[in-house]
Structures are given as structure tokens and as C-alpha cells.
Length: 552
Image 1 (cartoon, one colour):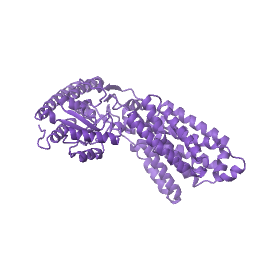
Image 2 (image 1 turned 135 degrees about the vertical axis):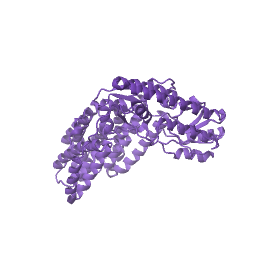
Image 3 (image 1 turned 90 degrees about the vertical axis):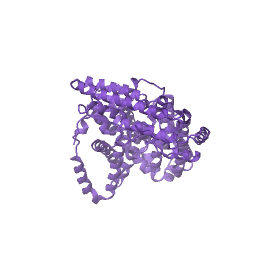
Image 4 (image 1 turned 45 degrees about the horizontal axis):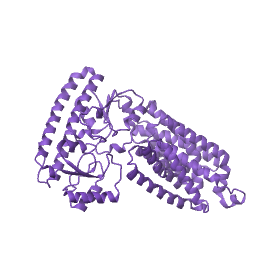
């Protein structure tokens, strides 16, 4: 039952929840008492412009988030000063402006990368020392402010008119409360992310309120419940291999529902005991591969000599990855980690640091033969796949020398298959005139493929090397005009992305969008060889209006 707590990354997560619980429990009671639940949820989203600016200019994301949250708090306080009962309306007004500004900055100014996604969704598995310091500071500030201003906040919360008549006219204490809510929310972003932060700030306090009658008991019990739900949710996430933030949110919601239905407590207790008896007995793999392509190559070369844990799963977007407990556990026991490099799996160093192990790290993007600046999708050139397989073979030989002969034999056979794949795809495109090889995809993931086989990239629905930029109406209109002018026959959606934008462009231009490509990931049950054959076949069919196929 207690095995998950042996891991260093889980221990740091526990400390983070314990340190945050002071701020979450105390500020949570004021949030519920003063009707600031929507404001608290909105703060995380309002921090979005600050995160974008911080990422774009290269300074600490939390500083940007704190700055944006402070501006948000001041704006709401200023708008609501004269009409105190309309915090919700003013919060919504400022929130809309913050969201609009964040989208414009992310899409059109900074073309932001996926570090923002990490902060928006959080990960309790990747807590660092700075996160612990921020959490401790937030709790200390909440304790001091509650001791100094708690009576004022309580009086205004129960009867604002009488409180003003008794002399509580200054807006400063209310402004302090709004800022403290903002500080607590931002301190929780790394652990839970903006979308789930209410599970820590609002739900425990709302749950305890059902059972307590005095403010002091409410606050103390809220702190205790926030800590208990945070630690239990982290444990549950490891046992069930789900994101910690989601586990904490579901657990907190379940506890609230059960608190409102006292008769359900025995059922809850029985379910808890049942879960406690469910432990993980899976052993640690010897190797970890970040992407589906690398995982496929590693398994081919390893055979049965090495167990391979693959982090990304088929049809998932590597740009939006959130670490799972099993990934950190696997990394903690791995002898070697294979990374894609070039920024695609930029989250992996944090996973390795959180795991606490000391695996050898092989950046396969650094050993490939052909390099295109700014493009991390190097595997779409089979020659680069050959170089990666050789590097995997050599790494396995270093960590498992007794099986070196097996690794060499498996790698040699697979290298021949890669060479055959390269020749067959080249032959397919060789039968199509160059001026008909015009490619438009969901995003710029096929630069290496196009460079290898003489394909002209006309454009992309998402003009970015990641899948996170959002196209503006002007960009889509420009792409539509370009597709018409170039007489492009097909718009190719990708398996890991929503196809609706590609379909929209296709309908506007008369092109087809029926042929799907595999850009960032393999499909379910698919191998690398099958993926590239499928991509070549789809492109040939799209370029020729379905008249030709690419088959071996």
C-alpha cells in the first residue's frame, strides 16, 4: 500500500501538497465565505497572458503568471469597488479580456511552445525546489493575513453594510484578499494547473462547511482535508496511473458528494479499503523511449533481452504530454533513456530529474544524418531512422553487454528493411511528376519526408512546428487562396489532431481531405515501417486524385 511513497518524485509531491494545504485551506474558507469561487477559478486562466509573455521573453513562467494575476486582481477590485455585489460580473468581464489577449499573444506574437501547456495543466509529479518554496511562502502569507485581517474579512462577508457603518471603509483589506487568492492559485499551478486548481482551493473548504459551525474549526479542518485529499489523490494517481491533478479533483468531488450524503460514508470507507489493497507489482523496465517511433525501434533491436517502456502512446500529441506516474516510475529504474531531441520531448529532463535515477540518456536527434533547422520530426527520413537504430544498438550493448550479439543481429536485419522502405517510397513518388507533388497538412510535420522525396510543401493549416498555434481567420483565408492558386488536390489531416480545420479548408477549396497522415505518432498497433508506407500511400493517392497507390 505504501510502496508509491518510496519514490523521490512522490515524496516531493507529498511535500508540495502539505505546504500548499495551509494556503488552500485558509484562503479556501474565505473564497467560499465571500463568494469568490468563480474569481479563484478565473485567476488561473487570467494568468495565461503572463505565461505566454514569460515563455516568449525567456524569464521564469511563475513571474509572468504572478504579474498577470496581480493585474487581474487589481482590475477586478477597481471595477467592483463601487458595486461590491457584482464581483462575478466584473470578473467575467476582465477574464474575457485576459483570454483574448493571451490567445493573440500565443498565436500571433510569440508562437508559444508547449511549456505553457505544462503550466496550464500542471503536474504534481514534476515538482522542483522552487515550487516547494513558493508553496511554503503562499501558506505563510495566508496565515499572517488571516491573523491580521480575518475579522475584517469576516465582518464584510456577513454584512458589508453594517461593517462599513462600523468603520470598515477601506478597500485595502479586500484588495489584500484578492491578491492572496491570486497568489495561492498561482502557487498551485505547477501542481494542478489552472483548470483543476479549484479542487484544492474551493472543494475542501466547501466540503468542511457542511459539517462545521465555527470559523476556526472550519479553517483547521479545511487545511487538514486539503492535505489529506492531495496526498491521497497523489497515491491514487500512482496506483491507477492517471494524472495526479485529475485524481485529486475526482477524489475531492467524491468526498464532497459523500459528505452531503452521510449514509454513504460506510460505502466510501469500504471502497477506500478495497483500493488500499490494490498495489502495483510491475517491475521497472531497463530502457525508456519517449516517442512511439523510438519505442518501436527499441523493441525491435532489444528483442527479449531488454524491457522497453514507451511513454507516448499511439495517436497522442507529444506537444501536449503530461507525465503519468508509470512513466516516472519506469524512468527511476531505467538504465538508458532514448529521447527524440530537438525540443519535441522537452519535458523528459524533468521526468528524469523527478524519477531520481541515473540512466544514460541518448539524444537520437543529435546523431541523425540529415538536419533541418527547427524541425524535430527527423524520423520521417528513413536515413535518419537508420542512424537512430545504430545509436540504440550501441546503447543497449553498453548497458547489457551479454546480449550484444543479439542487438547487432536484430539491428542489421532491421537496417535492411529501412533501406528497402526508402527505395520503395522513392520509386512511388518517382512515378508522379514533380509539379503534382504538392502537400498541405495539419501542421509542419513532414519537412524531412518532403525533403527526401522531392515533395513541395505548399502550406499547413497550423503554420508551426508544434500543434499548439491557432490559425487566425486571415491565415486560413490566405491558405485557401494559396491552395486554389496551386491547384492542390488534397488536404491531409493528421491522426493525432482534430481534422475539422483541414476539412474546412478542403471544403472551401474543393480539395479532398479523406487521406490521413501519421505525423507525430504511430497509429494503434502500427510499426514505423507501416506508418511510413501508409503516409506514402496516402500522399500518392491524394496527389493523383486516387488514380495511383504506393505498394511494395
